Image 1: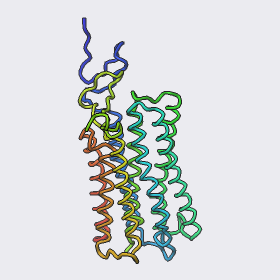
Image 2 (image 1 turned 180 degrees about the vertical axis):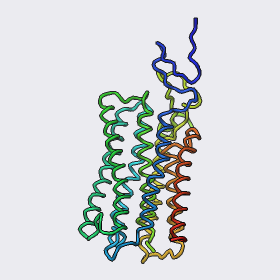
Image 3 (image 1 turned 60 degrees about the horizontal axis):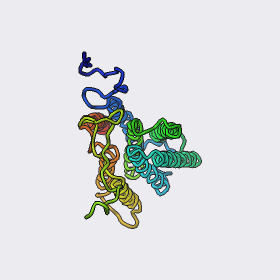
Image 4 (image 1 turned 180 degrees about the horizontal axis):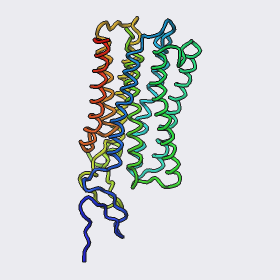
Length: 208
Length: 122
């Protein structure tokens, strides 16, 4: 007698190798990540809007826009943008079954992310030295909250990338579970997209 | 062109995620771009970023009233390239695009409304 799994229910019977492909053909994990990223748009949208509302409220003290170092931030932006390339190359390598290249690109992505975070720490430190701290005025609070939250997202992304790297070294990350790399990649590209917004709207567009 | 002259990295990579290496259905098998395509997109992104940074040096070229629209246009192009190529929205199931653009549209709508309210009512 042949047993057939009902529609929409994964077949866990022996010999089917834990086939988690849903009846819809759409990966639920990937869909969940996209829904999460959609909700993240609202989070960062709130922070960006708050900064736009408060960017000129300095209470007679130095505004963040007065201490921006655009050439330096441009280099950081370029580094983060290029990390999206290394991320997608990592996914491509894992999809091909080239685990060694996958590890190299994952590590490169994490390193570029680390360079970006290092740049942000330097930027924050120099801002504080120039008199713009978190509680200096509403504009600085909004600025540090926005860019700080973004930095936290990048840091979390680095942790995920290093976890993938370690999993790959242990032989637990192969072509069969390449979707894990794709999902971490989606998160990583999203933080890149958010920075594309921040770099233009916060740094490049003049305050007036 | 003979087959031998085509580089492996120039060919689209068919991604088969079927567990156990078996045949996947139409929803899980799709062509991802080649590595060289990704490099070309990255070069385009780098060029746009360079142009964005160039607008900062207004002593070299004053963009006048075109500055903000030009910067916003370049930002949207960069967003589009990353979302469609690097995040594979161009090649994946359209439902992912709908989920993302749904959240994005909601965010843009809500916050534009809020900012407009502050501009006109406060």
